Each structure stands twice: as C-alpha cells, then as structure tokens.
Image (cartoon, rainbow, N blue to C red; front, side, top):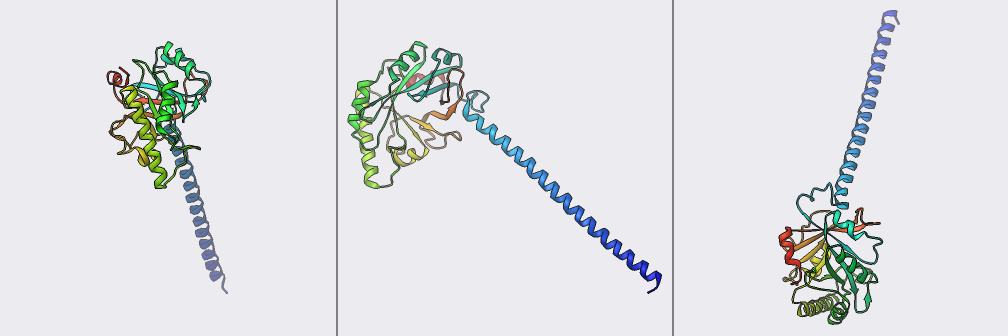
Length: 271
C-alpha cells in the first residue's frame, strides 16, 4: 500500500472518529438540556402547587379574599385553645359550634365555646352531626334540648357526611332509611325553630343524598380544592380548609367564606 493511500485511509478514519465524537457530544448536550428542562419544569410545577395549596390554608393572600368578605370558622371539642377576642382582629365574623351527635353525644366544649364566642361579639351558630339511619326526630330532640339558639344567632345546621360511623353505602334500603330519618330530623327542627336548617355536606354526599331532596335548605358545602362546583345556586357557605392557620388558634382550624355581602348575611340569622 502506498504512503498516499495509507494517509487517505487514516484521514477517513479520523473523520469518522470526529463525526462519532460530535454525535456523542450532541447526545450529551441534548440529554443535559432535557434534564435541565425537566428540573426547571418540576420546580415551576411544585412552586405552583404549593402556591395553589396555600390558598386553602389562610384567609390572607388568597385569590378569594377579595371576592368573599364574610369570614367564619367552625369548631368542636377537637380544637384546642382559641383566643376568641383575637378572632375579631383577624376579621372573623361568625363561628359554627358543634353541639350534639346522634341521639346522645354532647360536645364537651360547646357551652363554654358558645359563651366565649358570644362575649367576643361573634355571630354564633350551632350544628348537629347526623348519624345515618338513626331516628331523626330523636336526634332533633337531642339537639334542641342541648343547644343554645337565640334571636340573632345563626340558623342551626345539620352535618351530613361520611365517617367511620356513617359508612358510604349504595344499598337502596340503607339509603332510603338514611334519607327518611334525615328528612324527619330536618322537619322536626323546622317545626321547632321556624327556619329550615342549613345542611353542611361535601361533594360526594351532596350528589348522593342532598341534591333534589332538600330544595328549601341553604347549603354549606365543603370543597378543599377549588371553588364549589356543586350546589352551584344553593350554597351559601363554603368550607375551604381543614388546616387553616389563624393567629388566634393554637392548631389547625376549619375556615369558611359566606358567599354574599354583609347585608345579605343577616338572612342567615334567627329572628
């Protein structure tokens, strides 16, 4: 083989090697670029999710704080220390307090919470945790006997939601009994107070039990992820957080917005 041919072959090998190196470099650049882009997008998404979720922990810095002006909380014995006077400084207007559950349970902190909230100048409402299928009129009697509902207080409320006790059942007879007793309780409370109670519920229970069955009752809807899309024309209170942060509360607390104006809010008060 001539020296010229050998040099030519060597040049071809060098060019091929150079092209191979270039291809590898381009692959590395594309891989690094894709990785960087993935990390950047992940950071943006995480930041957005955290920012979005923060809306559902506070009344402040929320996209809804300029839309809903009437703020409220709801409380049971599960909540620890609350500085009721300080709540007014945080522009909280109303509170719903758990009073009873089923046919015999009484919330141990209800009476003291009621006195403290009233003394602080808050508008106070009282609610009952409904136990599926138990005698509705007896549940109503238990609530009426152990609750403080006075002129100027909020209309009483019935809490309707699944729980360890209230198991989600698609059985037709169970559902029918649950609805019958809930209607019996609602009717007994209406007869006693002259006002249809507010029904507190979430999306699943609203769709399963409340929609079309209770047309006269204002709805207090729980949605922890977005502005309510169910009970679109019926909801008056939106519970948007179970992990609310307030300076007046030692631990997490439930946060709520009333849907309309301060003037309209008077319609939720007992005469």
